Image (cartoon, rainbow, N blue to C red; front, side, top):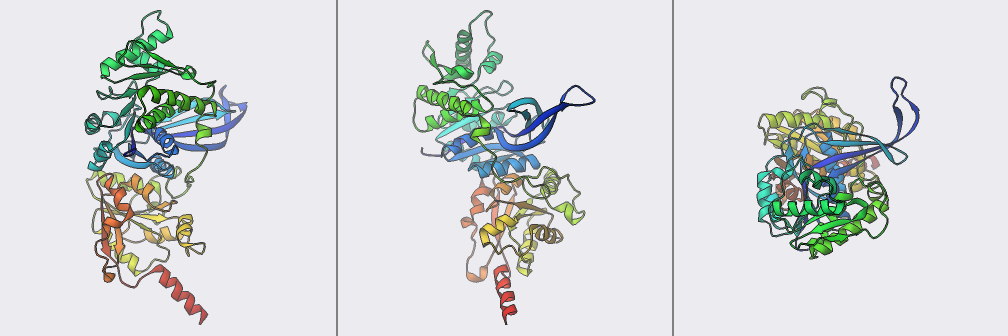
Length: 486
């Protein structure tokens, strides 16, 4: 493959709540689910991207993330799965789908997040990565990303094969896509069936109608456990049966099918070959236990108080108590205020294990570059992984409170990963600031900073500011220990 596989579309936060039912509710004849476990995972385009990344491909996800806890959690999960997130701004809340399950069966699905928000404009880097893709999968869930005009122009211009997984509430596919992959119910909504027509005749008529309407190269209608029906320029459709029994949880099977077809096309397969691979992959996925088996619980933990991925915090007022300035909810509230006023969001990061004058100088300089300063703080686990088992000296709780108490710091976000990439993909700062030692002749090191590549995804900038020479947490610890041994 000459470039990354790009997945473009709407990402949702899927949450499976497992439990047991032993009684009925006393005030209504409904079962009471006693929760035993809960698992978060990306849904929609995010799930398709995770499937593609699990096959070893370089995967870029172009999606919209909201400034809320759900958006933060998605960014952490996607980054942990090896997906490069190129985020667009998203007005409103993160869409969530919560499935309440007992003994492997879904009792109820609870959707929240409200109406679709308007995705923001893509950066030049997003348009560049689409142009350089080896294949593009549009995973449309009808919430607006596939309708964005600049993205549609980029899709129409790319030379890469484009796979379009449509949604009845979404827009028409961009003319000229290589393959569209609707399921049976979607085909019936998009192309009304003739009365009395057989299942295969209905699928074939719908596929040919969509192929002509969208000027698509081919349309593959997925038929659940019976495989898929492929219609192309010829008059005779190709039926691709499943290689064996495919009974089980079908949640995510369409995403697995579309991701497998996209990877095959990226590697040079014919459309018919790609559909055969996709049928085999989706069938094995369902037979193997579905999404719960394919994506077992993993990734960053859900923090209950302050860190990236928190679901428990309620927004606190900006400028209130120190505790109100730490955590996802505090950052989300701050981002909403600053962006609504057209302000500039500045962020910086680090361990800040022993807060010293060099840190303060960097933070004060960073705050002068915009209208707020968010500090991305390595958690205790992250610091230990980077610095060794004897670090940190101070807990993340103490470190975050000290930072939040500074007048130049508006909010603190704790992250668990070795790098702040996931946190940055959610915060999307306009400016990322690092302290630089100009006394050593380092000069402008922004081009070598790993965060610079992440910032380019949404058009942000990375800068270096001077810090006071000779100030170092490690040196402070060494001098303190040396003093104790004298």
